[in-house]
Amino acid sequence: DITTDKGAIAKYNALRVSFEKMLLAATGDDLACMVQAFCYLVGALGAQKLDLQETIKYRKALCSTVDELEKLSTMVSSTVLPSKTDAMGWVDFKNSCSAATNRINQSVKDAINVYLEKYGEEMKL
Image 1: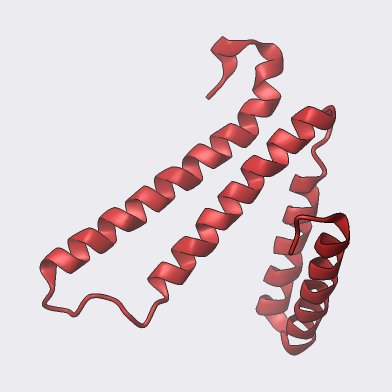
Image 2: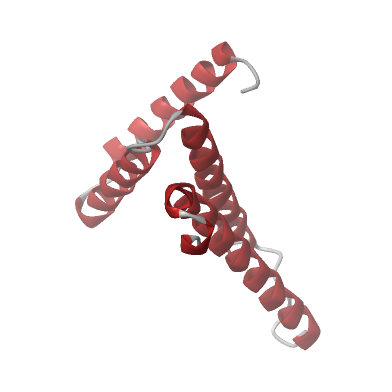
């Protein structure tokens, strides 16, 4: 439950422990990619040069991006994919993937637009 500050910190601590276990099990390129992805996330969450309201709006857009990416990853790694001969199932699956990538694209634009709004409406993506 992340609706309270205490719940959010508890969830963070549980995920931190899980992430550290994954790091300890990883080696080589896998380890480097995990650390780099974590660095990117920390850097992106920094929300440099934004006031509190802008920071919240920016971070919500980032959360939407990562949420959609997680849903898309779950969808494409599912063991319940259409059969090889189910053409309409694959068309639907492709359309669902395209819709998810469009939502990711929009969330990224929303995050960037928080910065660009400072320069006027015509500068937004």
